[in-house]
Image 1 (cartoon, rainbow, N blue to C red):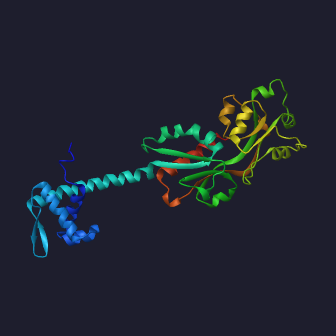
Image 2: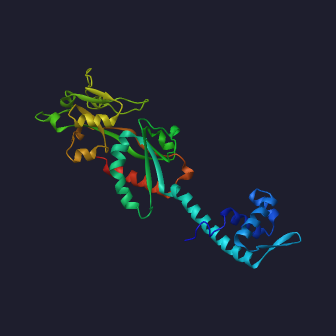
Image 3: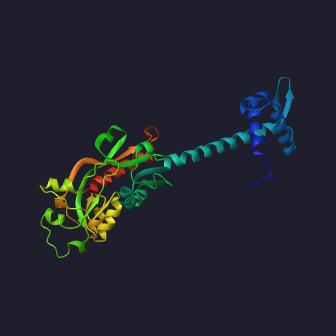
Amino acid sequence: MPTNEALPPLQSLVVFESAARHLSFTRAARELGTTQPAISQQIRGLEANLNSLLFVRIYRGVELTEAGNKLLLATQKSLQSLTSVCDDIRQQPKNNRITVATDFAFATYGLMPKLSEFRNLYQNEFPDMDIRLQTSQAPEVENKGEADIVILFGADHYQSQDSYQLLSEKVYPVCSKALVEGKQIDSLADLLNLPLLKLNALNGKPWLNWDDVAHEYGLTLNGVNAQLESDNFTLLVQAALAGQGVSLAWSPLVDDLVQAGILVAFPQFSHSSNNGYHLIFTRPEGRTPLMQVFAQWLSDNLQSDQLN
């Protein structure tokens, strides 16, 4: 392995390559943004380091000596190799990294359980892939930060952007087994008599709520107050798991909990809307193959999961 003492300074080699290519110290100075005396000083230092003459000064220029020609070939080959490697390194984060911004609920239930499957499927195609999550209560495209992709809930006007609709909105009631143990649940009215957990709208987000579901089935809440209200769906799921009440669940975000028997679901009282989750590319001109594959895979995966 070469040591620092065995190699001359890299800057002097860059200067030498430019001067040797142009056969002119003046042109090398112009290319490198410096002065002709500075180029001459670098060359003298390099010649002293190598204890060999590299240039012969002639009228209006210079010529390479035999040692200079030998060094030029090696220097150009090495610099080209370094340039290629550096370009590959610069491109790697762009090609193999995705930063995704979304809300807490979608990150917790829509992405985290699935990311290992995606990595396993596409690791060979995209080695060293790096998927990063940015979570907030209400992500917006306008405040995307460094995110390449924003996944958010909203109406179908997001379809006018460079986006995928991942899911249409579909909700159904869920609760813990303990809450309904020994109770006869034959109708939505039976569920509405139990403690209710309510998701509050955030920044005008038009989530389906208990009033919407009750109205769909010809009922009203008749002023019944929720046992617990929150603007965080993840907290409501935890409250439902703890037996504190019945929550509306967004399919397929909690379908795994239902299929595992951790939550009891009542899909017969489901309700749908035209809203849903959308995946939006924040910089369409910078969309990479990995981003495209990720978006298509997530869309296919979620839609196949959503309960009918």
